[in-house]
Length: 276
Length: 288
Image (cartoon, rainbow over all chains, first blue to last red; front, side, top):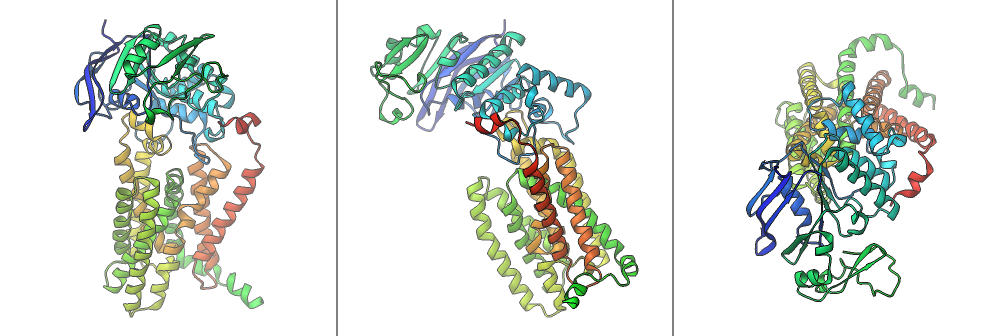
């Protein structure tokens, strides 16, 4: 079976700096891959490369057997969360409709079939109640629901999510990640999910790609998210704690990563969600 | 006092005057359509200040044309396009854009003042460029304005949906292969043309009342992507046609009438918008 997404010895370098090199990873239909690691390790660039917006330095990335290209309808995309500004002339249903046919020239007049599809998507992401509300009036969690609806509108084979849970509270983190997971179950889409916190999706993830310091590890969460593996990856002692089904990574990385990595003393209450 | 109001609103011989300016009214209505449609994107792309910057360079171009005896509409088109492209290319980021505009604007205005000071023709022409005077526009110029207006409207209708996508949701639009950069340049060109024709009517200083106020008013009362441009066009056409008709008798420039009507529409829309029921209270508190 052809993998949905296939990295073959893919490398990305910016001048002297290597973000990742010799990355070989196949993501199959229905697979959920979490991309973890501190900021600045090339997680977003990895998504941009799959979207055909970032040329890789060497190797190849293929989507369903052919090299990735820009603007492929078979890829759905949830960008890093930016709240839509007030006064934007767009309702929830319109944002979803853009995911269906936003690239088409001409006036934004939908066909009956398109309107039916948008209604269906509104139901699928539980956004019917605020379908006609201005997007800007929606809360962060509601906007992300709509974003999920937009990203799956064209029934993509691959869904790329860039920190879709950022700045959501725990309940909304769970809701939004479950919506994304539901699409995988419904359509067999492959999911590549960039996040700094694996906990909300821990139960869904098949594989983890952990990027750090120009190196990476690939494996199941249980294989990769261990003190031993991460210490080796970071090249400095890192402790991974598991408590009540949550994972907390403590210590390690060099100073410039300190603000990205919260360092919890394990016996103190963890007020922010576990950090990875 | 009677004299003041009489000068402001004078309807003697109104029918006869109307007959004389029906061309201007038609041209005004078309400009209203241009302004109303362009305004929607000016608002959603946050380009209100850019409109002002472009209009000052357009004014410089028009006054240069006046001085050298060239076509005034042509001059303002050239000025507009130069400004629009400069702002588009140098000001891709919002912060850069504002400073580029702030640098260009006084330069354009200064040039315009220089050209006008050197110009020795009819002084009404001078003042008209800054404050507008559609009735003084002659027929060949009217034709040029019509052609440009039709061009802008057609261009906008063709790119409407992808331009909406690129304006409100740039990252996803780019991921979907929408030519975000190309559309941005194309819109700046259309905006430049729209500014150039609007200047002929309301003048460089008051272009915002045609290209921003109607759309801003519409967005106060609706979020529908279909209703917003329709209302915006209706507001712009009402402002400009109403302004032309009201100004007929008094022989005053039309721009104060246009700007006042468009301002009043905005105020009314703001009041209506504030009274519209806020969507569920959770939405307003829940924004994280």
